Image 1 (cartoon, rainbow, N blue to C red):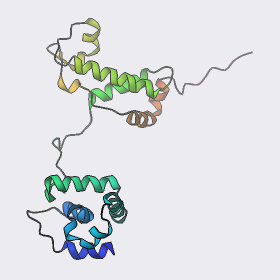
Image 2 (cartoon, rainbow, N blue to C red; image 1 turned 60 degrees about the vertical axis):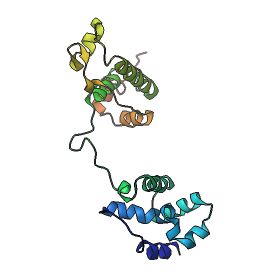
Image 3 (cartoon, rainbow, N blue to C red; image 1 turned 180 degrees about the vertical axis):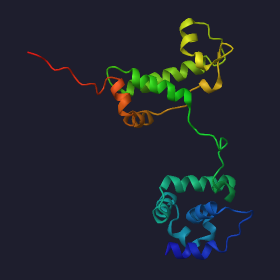
Image 4 (cartoon, rainbow, N blue to C red; image 1 turned 90 degrees about the vertical axis):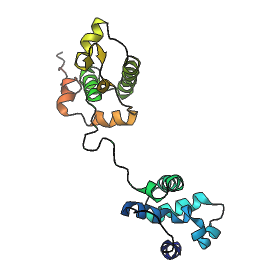
Length: 197
C-alpha cells in the first residue's frame, strides 16, 4: 500500500532545479518523511511514529534506518540538491596518507612481541597528538630531527606529515591484511627452535 501511495504522490510533487538521478532515487525513498502533506494516508497511519515510518521506508528501499534518517535531514536542510552525491574536494588524488602508512608499517614490522592492536592504536594516537602539537614549532631535538627527517621542511613538520584519525577497527583490519613477509619480519611467524633434550 505504501508503494502505491508513494508512486501516486511522487508524480505530483514539484521539484525545482536539475536533480540528479541519485537525488531523485533518494527522494523517492524518503518522500513520505520529507513531505508528509503530500502523503495524507501515510501521514495519518504513521502519525507520531516517525521512527517506525523511517524503519518501514528503509526496509522497503533496502537501506538502513540511519541512512533514511540522514537523507531526510539533508533534504530538510538543503532540499533536493542536498541529496545528490557530493564531489570530493580531493577528486583525482588518492586518499592514501603516506605518513600514516609509514608509521603503521614501522610499528607492525618493529613489533617483536607480536601484533598488539590496542598498543599500536594507542601509539598511533600518541604520535598523532605529538605531530599535531608540534606542527607549528621548530623541531630541535636530535632524535626528532633524525626520526622525522623525511617529513621536515626548514626544521618544521610539513603538513603532509600529519596523521589522520584512525580507528581501532581500521588498525585491526590492516593488521590482518599484513603480508606474510611483514609477519615473518616482525617475528610473528618465525619458526621456533626445537628443544634438544
